[in-house]
Length: 192
Length: 389
Image (tube, rainbow over all chains, first blue to last red; front, side, top):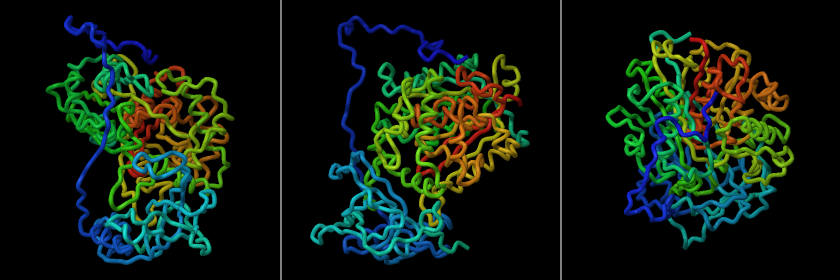
């Protein structure tokens, strides 16, 4: 039979007594400390081009020379082929919702975001992979798999070298995309 | 059948802590000592018998303690012994057990202790999983934000009845009542309450997600001579496998990742299992969100594609009356000390074939399967254990 979870394991039953000098001090079990992380991010070749493009409201992707897959945001490598990707491949700021949720919990790092909101896998026209973004300017309940969307950009005078320039994705009004292979996300490309 | 050349390896001790949202009575070191000493006690060993320690936990920035294995070495009483740290995100507990087994299988050590843990009360996993990067926007509220769109796709693909997820959650919480170590003990919970629970990440309800737990799990493993000589229950390791894949490539199957299917094929081949559903007596798999039970049943080859939910609906995965009981311990849905969760699956599989699972024992269990996954469903670790060598 399993050991009683409330028992003291053999070898651990040693009584610990505080020295007399601190015997009357209140025992502290835990302290709460604020946590933060600051870092300098070095984006590398592919992501540098992507981030510079972002500042000009352009979406700059890269292509795998072997599989033909187009990656956005580009991380500079083709995971299937294991070789560097090449760019630039400019993509339009339109695509479709591959799948989504309606989230009713806040995100610690996004105090600006008021639940409920819709997080979705967005696949841009011409891209092989999806990425997550917000679907905005519509009721979350009206979002569908296959729904066509277009980017909503920040005002021009607020643009930075950041993916956050795209505030979210709104319905474009075009007819829904039919999703044929529902298990997979993105497009397989022409893997040789 | 053991793969030629490998040392046959046995689990002779399992130790767990009581899982709880806050184990305020112990430090991180104290938590580990509790699990480690229980494993040693069951194995009838002391630290003097242990040649090396293999540790695993989820990312260090969860608790904000970097490389905790260094300071924990002393707390665990293993100063001067080789220590190895394993890290594969949420699957780490399973991977750590595989690595520890490989130390014995490869005859590097005779007897090892392996341990995995998380102290979620001293961390903020939701924060750690939502760190902003300049090339992405932060839109995921933790792991549920990432996995819920994938579950939505499974639901659409399989055309499964809407309440299958609730059935999994209710079953696992019922199972947890038979496991004194489980975090969630909800004896008065009704199925209707599970269904009426608010949607957190629609289509996933609060009741269909795992809790946030403190806890540790440890095992003692030894070689064939040690296993044969052991005066007590033994679980023989029949196969171990690990696989990883990128979480972003075109056409990736996110419902049943290629790495999951290949890992399962490998581990069942090692164990000589041909008919997985018939030959495996009990399954402990990593189900942090309810719908992952039918999804993994299919991906692991226990059910046809698109049909796994039927095993939930007809009760096949129940502890009582099921032909393939899944997560008799209550699973991750009832206790989630992230880094430990994978090892708990492996350890619970071992306890079943040892006949030591107490009230949640499956009668006559001879062959059991333990499973863990992590990251964006991209890291996998699995093992098969048996009562017979």
